[in-house]
Length: 187
Image (cartoon, rainbow, N blue to C red; front, side):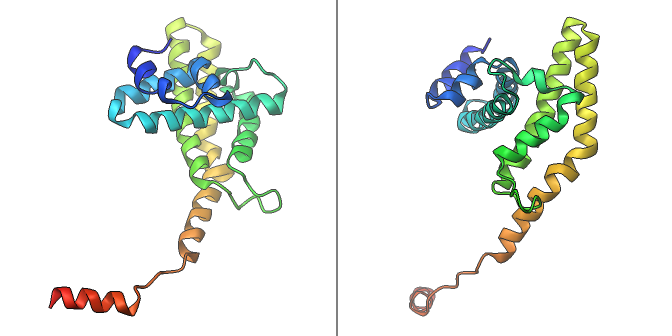
């Protein structure tokens, strides 16, 4: 259940679509939003909304890949489904099919990595609250996999792509007329 602050400041501003429907109804995505809302506050409502929508996009991709329209993010915070999550992140972040070291949306891949780590911690916390050893264990092992293999699967490629884009970006120099105007103003 979402708090009034999250509901009024974040969820109510979301575009009404399939993505927002998932964000509003997925227990872990809501808990993630609550966590960000407590940390960042109402001034960052747009950022919180974006992060929740990114996770919701991932959930939609996971549902599509696995043919289960009712699945929740919590169902995938499981070491046995880690490879499925990695594959869905690659789809959502538009990894190049021919060259898997190229990422179409590298910032999305990086943000999803951080968000998934937080979500696994949230699921672990839920398990602790319920005293459910299976949930605690699954979330713990998922976190270990994130720590051990996320870098080689996702982060390294995303950071390399970002670096290449920055390096290959042409430097735009000011036109001579602009320089003359600046010179006139300063002297």
